[in-house]
Image 1 (cartoon, helix red, strand yellow):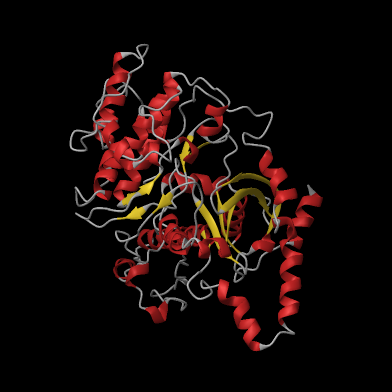
Image 2 (tube, one colour):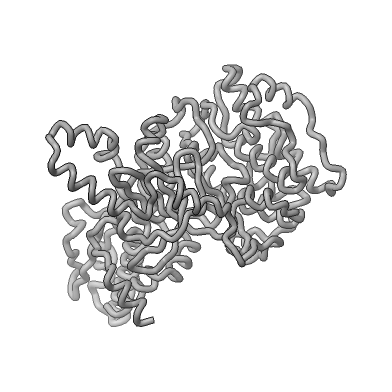
Length: 487
């Protein structure tokens, strides 16, 4: 243990230092998408393990995908939910953009389907409930995911489902509809195709519930309800929706009702809210609070003897990849030294592949959680002081309580200035939360972005009960807690 502590102290990150690639140790590759890859990393100062998703700037620029990357970060920095793959850090360098997220070692549902796993209906029911809770959370934030499929549902080591990949997700305002042809064809709802044919003005959150129904069908039967592939013409796909799927005869009636309600071609009659789902016979007896707290034991537990992913990813990274991640530090150092001897015009040309230099900012969820923890401790200390003043009969206690200021009420010039509160006085330092933007990956596509607003969003300042309990168990959260108690 002493050796580990010594190693971590050597990699200590200063409070004012932005997170970057050098702060992580690359362990192994575990996945890939259309223009990015995923690897397991360990943060050097804390020893915490994460999944790092990285995307080539050159490839994103070539495929006109930079806007998707920035929009995904705008969405991810708002999100914190037990059934999402949450973002912790984002940053970039000359070559790549990076997303550091929750590490889930149970593999995605697509991998388990290829391993011929037979999911019992109880397991499928829990997956539907967990993803439905995530969809309800996203809907409250006006977010349409648009790419729900087994590839984007990851399992943790216990077997709980988590939704990932917001590369084609979009934010919609009240009464606004999305309209672009986005997603993965076999899982896209009929109204998405109808919109692409200009037959309807747009679509809403109901398309995600259709996709969830297709996933439930596939997990419980081993096939999809409609024979649709990436090369199937849209006209042929729309004709398929005019027929009813072939329902498996072994399904019990309650489960059949659930799937029929989810993949109803008419979005007006489709099940599309959490309350509607809870009312169904197949779902009504679930303990939803226990599910949200992850206290319900999943029927299927991923194997723990090996990584639940394709082993060829690691071989490709080591042998085929022209710019392997483990050689990045030396490669960038060489490039930077060469630029020192280049002419100004050549140096400017070198940075034409970095249009994000001014737009892209880093995100650090841990710093935000630490700030919230400090504010909570300061608030508790202030409340304790006020109670002590009231108990002692201090005439100024009630007056002092009237002059307490919240973060939103503080003028900007006081954000780093101690605030005096009568005698005795209280020092309270208020730090503005950091904001940022970033990334995405997978085999999805999006043909246009006319419905995607690019409004700037900042992370939620209120921490959920789940995120409080999680940060308390994390190494960094424990460190902040102990420091706060000593101070």
